[in-house]
Image (cartoon, rainbow, N blue to C red; front, side, top):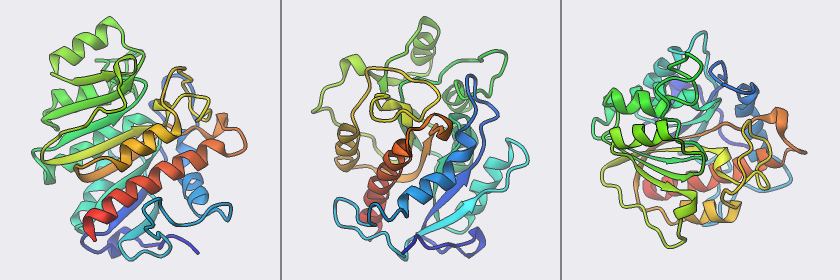
Length: 275
């Protein structure tokens, strides 16, 4: 059993293209997320679980789902080109990172096809720094680059619990709808019109549930809470990423399995919409 292997140039319109972005050159603290994409796929295909999502979608050789392998990246700007290629086939990109800096070039590509794109962002960190350690393309900066460039018309952030004065000012500057972890209520809904790009940073989870991340930030969501949120989404999701899994800090592959579970439930939402 497996996810269908499909080169990008053989994708079909409407397929969801899982594509690895093995890039962590812009990580500010620890490297390791570049190793993540193939390990997430291995977890998806592990004999310890099965291919069914919780709404009973069977991902085994599903005709509308393809694993395109790791993108060939010689430099950061290649990421945008690889997503351009997926979109040119009429497929929906689902990127597996990689550090969170990959989201900026991915969204740049997405915005060409979806000029009224909005973003739903799950993370412990706002990633709105104008620059960090002199790097404007740090994994701490992607949403500043996206919003200042006009590549999304609106940004909603969920699970933030590391806010500082600079990023608060940035959030106000870009009119971000930020739901800090301290303010989260289980009955909150996301009402976002038009096409939505969903970016999921694994450290939105409490490190008790996902130890394999570079930045352990206590006080986050449980795995069940984020799965329930995903399952309750009623949005036009046109692309996704799952980023910042760091295998170097994982414990017995636990976080890989959590990442695979998040990917499965996000796929279930998209495949249900497209079926």
